[in-house]
Image (cartoon, rainbow, N blue to C red; front, top):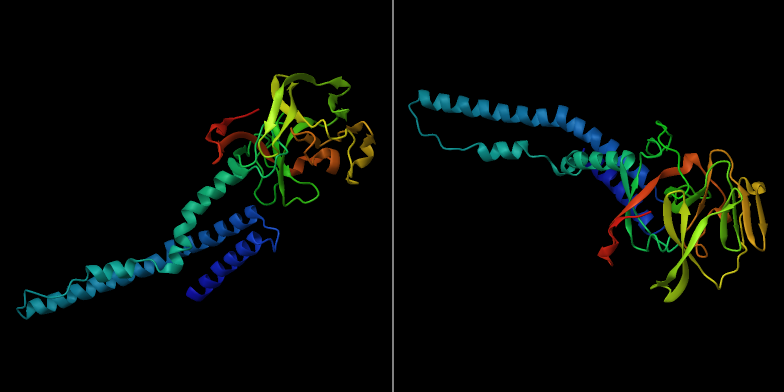
Length: 321
């Protein structure tokens, strides 16, 4: 078992190392699922096989000690040297290969259940959602708002709520589903979304916009025009870069491309059933649905709602719209 366990742990370490150095496309959900299954099997083996064996060995040791003391007592020897307490502790102690498997199972399964069905942490890697979310924000994503999904397979098992315009949503990037992206929902199934001359309209009606003071981006060391957009009762801030043109360069030929019309003014798209149109709040610095198309319902991961840490700026902690 020691050799087998060493091989299993080495395989996990090799996969994690290859992922870290960019040699393979990692899948943390799959890795966590496999870790849960493997450590769970070891935990069951420990609970119902290895631990009873060690307990039986202790019982034999105790019986032998009692027999020895009884025999010595018959011979008139009352004082008997030898304390078996240390030997009992050693017999009951888990070997290293169970410590690193069965011993980790309770922690791993709690993390697996929390991450799969309740809340999943993410780190914001880029500035596409500035000013709402900054690079380095550590956020929480609600995994059940849009319906509970099976881990790894991402198959929906409960309906939940439908994504609404204005929601900040994490989803699997359609061109490469192993990657998670975060953007804002601006178009739901059946909507006609137009982003022309840097103005957003939904079904022919311009989204309510209010000018705000310019936003200073500390990473870019520049000021950007800032606006507040309103979707129903939801308000959020967006940025525009006056130096960027309105047209969309280099859009992919994605599924549903024929539902979009590209001009020098921007893009207009009819959102298909079961799909969503996503945009970043940093409108001129966001690779979003304008470039790679619609997000199908099956790609949804969850709704982002809370910044739980930013090590460079503790004031970032809190909820957001």
